[in-house]
Amino acid sequence: MKTPVPDYLQHVLSACNNNQSGALANYIPELAQADPNKLALALSTIDGTIYSTGDDTLEFTIQSMSKPFAYALALKTLGLNAVLQKVGVEPSGEAFNQISLGQDQLPKNPMINSGAITTHALLPHKKTVSRAEHLRRFLSELAGRELQFDENVYASEVKTAFRNMSIGYMLRTVGVMDEDPEQIVNGYIQQCSIKVTVKDLAAMTSVLANGGIQPKTGKRLLDRAIVRQVLSVMMTCGMYDAAGDWLTTVGIPAKSGVAGGIMGVLPGQVGIAVFSPKLDSHGNSVRGVEIFERLSSDMGLHLMEGTPSAQTILQSRYSIGKKQNVIVYELRGVLQFTESEMLLRFLQDEPQAKNKIILDLTNLTLIHDVGARMLFEGVKRLKEDGHQVIVVDSEGVLSEEQVKGNKRLVVNDTLEHYLAQFEEKK
Ligand code: GLN
Image (cartoon, rainbow, N blue to C red; front, side, top):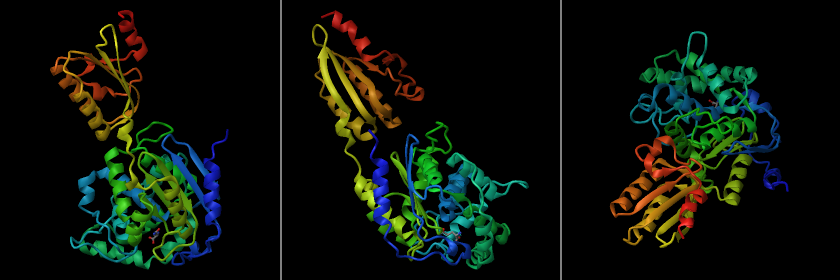
């Protein structure tokens, strides 16, 4: 059997192929030379598989899709508070290159140019390694290959960067930035000129979808809190003055770039990247938006749809042993707040009789910290009621940190093996 996913992606691409509307970005002369027919799509899963179709080996400049990653690197380097003192997190409802500041005289968010230029100034740098080079190295690590700058696009944009230069001088004037505005704006433009394919972007977004861990290597590249901050800002500000429209129709945190790319991240599920150079009036790829709309509605990817996962937490409950006083709870799925609440409600209904209760975690795929805390609190209360309780975790779903202080309650044997002793007593 061949998985139908690639065929489906190919189908979505073909369905959007006829859409010829939009226009190439022409304020950067080199981008006006792009082939408007190019079209590519890639999707990454959180275990690191990448499906791609169309012009998926074609490189284009990352442009504004570099902004969330630069923000992530600034947060990683300086911490949230220091960054918040320089750049806000409010949607601007304005164009990406608006020459404006919030009432507090700070750029409104890191996704528009004023915020992104400020963020660029916050990137790590040494005499020999520029801010843009630091970011290039970071993006290469996320993509899993060495990315390069596009010197032509860089040179072309620098020549016509009057607007971004004005923003740089404005930031210097109000004191948001102490550095030489020309140097910072040029560095920002270089950051935008890093070349990627949709496959690179899909790999990069898979790290964000996976809570900061590179799914292929298992290496943590970003703290979970940073990923949450970045995705929140992408959700509210990533599509500029089309952010509300995007949230209601697509519902996936995303960021577009003026070369024609759009990348999206559905936390815990998928990363998506598209490329098609013609843009709408907001500067977002026309066919890119259409592809995202289709994927979101066909595959139920809207963030606000949610999943009633709690219903699946209890796989089965049965009693065994001579007196039928050993009660086994087999759990499955993911243990977050909703599932833990449901589990605790089941346990609350346990008769007062002094039973032995076995909670089998083997088929759980993930236990969030809140799930572990609620589980052990439930165990504590069952014991206070006079029950004996044992947690079977043969697959080691609980982390060491989560088990801390409850080690004696946890058995790492398989359920079958553990239950055999009660069968013998029958
Ligand atoms: N380098 C571009 C600019 O600053 C990036 C804009 C974008 O991709 N929206 O104008």
